[in-house]
Image (cartoon, rainbow, N blue to C red; front, side):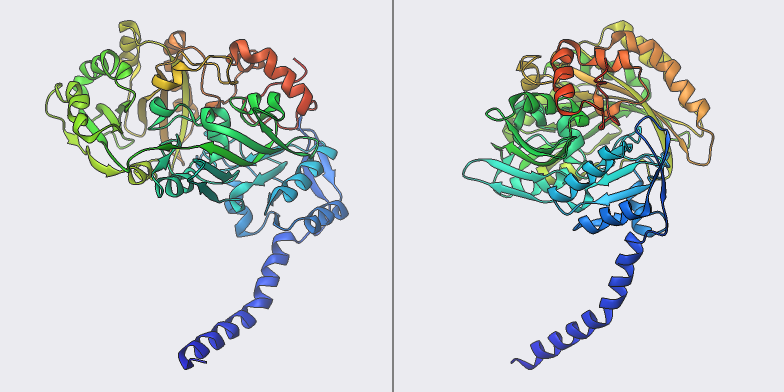
Length: 498
């Protein structure tokens, strides 16, 4: 044996031997059950889970059962919005579909409140809970691409960056959000906008099939040929029907190099920027993805108005596609360059809140009349200690060429998703800022036509159900069939008792 290789192997073996007891102790700490567990039911009533049952659940898992009091639990219970601070009674980190089936069965049999976390991007914290069970899918991640069939197979807990990286490596792509650490499950089952959505449709438009654990603990495959009603409902009905363990995505050929970045102007030009966005960008070529941004900083710095763009068509046509935006004048920030697509998909990865709390309201718009622009500008009130952001995410193109009842997602006429955010330091009181954005939203809501279900907060049953528009009755039938007790309720919930 090569002497260097032998020495390396011997050292590795010694480390492994020394570490084994420590690892075993650590694992026992994750699953240690010292007594019965206080928890809550789906309707938030106090319940108690006997010690023996929790130990039996732990023994049934190949993955982890996390209990309060260790670092792994603390990481799992958190979501991206640091203003959300909730404590599940139990956290299951599955290694595969069997673990998810066991966890779902355990929660259903005990009528236990259940949350499912993928990327943790839910602003309202729907992927965590107080007193219930959280299924944390961070241990269920992979993406495999079959270039010949142009299909990607993506585990239910995967992040979008994994899909982008594997598909673009063979010159293929599908719509996959705008932040690489977004979870594939929440984004895709709600709709799934992204920088190539106007070319290739929503993420859910590219779903060829799913494997899903339903409320009765079964693992089902849903596609156009099998469990067709569930396949239809999962594509726009969010997490209402179960936990998706695997997605099959259709992929499309695309070059790696795109042209994109930010073009920002002083806030004094906000109305001109909005006019160009409405009159040109909203109905631009399918290859042009363009988001409107108006933003201030918490520190009270001057606000800016501008656009984020990604042109994925032929490079020699990019200048013409972007010319109406540059006609506004000389920007104060211009980061538009030729970029690798995977790079631009990662470019916003650090824009989420880290030390600040956030609250948002949102809704789809089919047009931006002058009166809406006036309301947006009049209500925009940045202040020291509070950031305010107006954001329009581009829709239209191929997204709008799909019938409203072809999938559960109904808002096919939308030109953009309009959002208003407010942010504040975590240590400060939330109420003044939340109240401000709600008052602001009251002036904007009349211009909207439903809202993106991943941005659901505390809407009434009537508002939630109405948001599914003409698809609601069919969705209700699917809910009653696959989740009649409403186990999966921490979402834009379809109440089966409606």
